Length: 478
Image 1: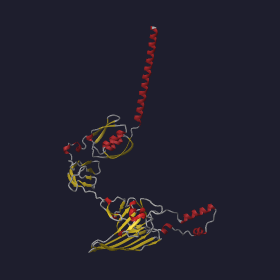
Image 2: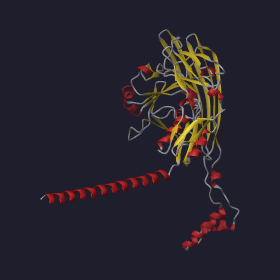
Image 3: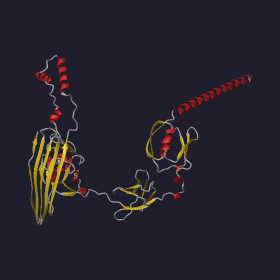
Image 4: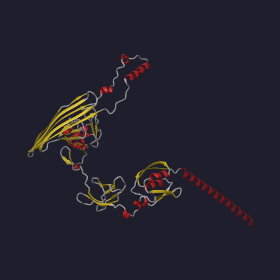
């Protein structure tokens, strides 16, 4: 029995030795295979792809490290933080990338190993950076206040063209180190107009920011009264007449293009044709035309009105307009107020506009000879005899009419205005005359409109009376 146990122990010990040997061999194979795989994957591709604009060198090094190939060693205070670099490379080597980003800097690089790079200063270059802090340019200081002299905390100050940014303290003071003595500082604060100041070797500046102008106190006409915009609950649009006067158009609708959000103006292109105006899209199966109100008078169609006589335009967009004007306001309301005279000495205004209209593109078509050859081939392939007219033109090759030139021309747009306004002793007047002529690009298309407007008002105590007269005639030629 003792001998049998020894044999069993020997057998178990032999099996254990075999198992350990197999485990060691498996570990050796796994380590060898992993090392070879890592070496292959590491050596397959160390090319770098970057696309960065106006960033610090520190961010470029970080972007290269994120690609998993290289690590950088450097002193943070040795980098020129005020200097920004831009780089755009694809599958470039490390040497090419570092030469590009370090060009123009006092820095160089050294390879400590295959993947460890040291960034150091070039000896003897950029002595200004190596100088003590006391010898560097002093910071720009100052204080920012509002019109009342109150300090403004949190104002953003940025050196224009760089990422050099700071902000004011609670007492409105700030301090910033700029890269050049003639740098431009940009001051930005919510609710105030942005301001830019060029230093011109100044070391201290104090400025006052101006609040942004708000249109919330602007008066809006809504039909039965005039209210401030901030007190209005409905959706409205007020046309900036200064911008409308810059647009040359024969109708009021043409001057609204692109000036009011939610209002679409489609011009058909023909002279004198009123444009199609939609407020917040199509709201009816029958018509999408809005209701027009000119000096309190209702009109269903676009009014034939001189745009130069318009003083203000308000647009009521939502359903609240129906409470004032009824169901006809379902597509919105355009309220137009014309100009009136002001008390004072007579004032004469004269304006003249002239524009040219052309086709944006003409097609390059065949001449008569090429067209006749194509025509002959078509009839020959069809086995049909040539028409008499085509045969006559073949016998007379001098006929060569460019129909695009024959029916089109360079059109023009003319707008002439003269007005007289003034008043006194409770009476004001405004008289204007206008002649508008539009010669279209198609020969035979023309529109002209002479008009005369007279607006007068007289105030006697609580009584106001006067007249609002428009004499107008227009002709379309098609």
